[in-house]
Length: 431
Ligand SMILES: *Cc1c(COP(=O)(O)O)cnc(C)c1O
Image: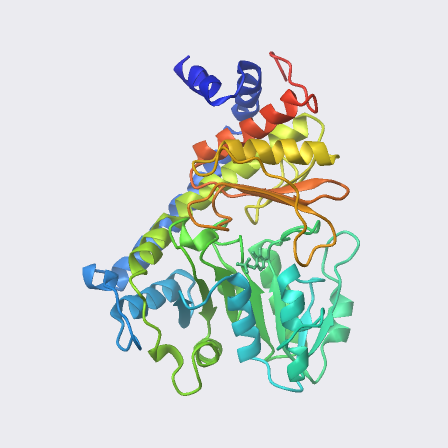
């Protein structure tokens, strides 16, 4: 068994390896379905690139103002096509996902308007953008109010509550697709579509933005296919395919996206400026690879869920559940287990594999946070990574993996470290 010997050389014992193989044996049909979605999305991306005649001049660097930047303009047409929208803004000048979301919100809300989240509390970093937590230059400071309707006990939409919350001032609705680092379910594109239809039936003309982080290419459709006026995400997550070293995107109606462009650059300039600085090859090739990369990350999430679930750990989503994003939570029950898990993920990395992650105080968190990441692009969470706050239920959030094989190694190594520390047990002939 050359493969088993290779894993052994990397530090995975035969017992852990064979337990992993026994878990995998039951996942064939799931993986086939993941591949089917990836194949569909790959075709969708290629078709868009062909339609807009992507060619070598698109990869050339521009500097200065970046007028008539054919690479940038063509890429935006490709994105608009992939997401089936009128327009797209895809820029290295958008520094991260939070920035893209902040641009989309502040460009489409004016003083006196109200923003509504019908899906409970938004992602941590958006609390300061909105002004839920006091912050300089928040929407609140500019006179934009915020209202929130929490999900029901079972994680569903509170239809009556949402209807009651929509008022004369409500201008924009923000829907977060992924659970992020919360315990609520991630929404399917279909559920998001139902929510958007409902919202627009209560108040026609109301605009809807979807935070699509971690959701791109997980399904065959995107929120932009089911009525979202803006769909927003980060290029160092799914759509950058691991190659984009920075960036964010906003796709949607021409009206909303052009306002975003004016907010990002300056009134009067909009989408006409913004040199690409030579980054275009990574953006195009990353988008080209993204459906396959997302498939690898999804297989890793499904494998981790089933592997840990069978050992008795609570996992969210559960092993058998359908996926709508690439994040997997594993409740490990103790700080020691979180350290061991993260140590394993780090030890499997191509970069910084010799580093041992330690919990650390982080701005914005009330407990120490542990993080494992050995990434080519710093902070990239489409690359294999794990993190979590050191507090009950001691859950690690695990995501990414540029290839399925790397994700598999990382998960096996995480289990190996737990076994080595006496925190988990696999029988040689498990299940
Ligand atoms: C990652 C993420 C963000 C913020 O993206 P950054 O690139 O980290 O700023 C926002 N929303 C969700 C759901 C995310 O997962």
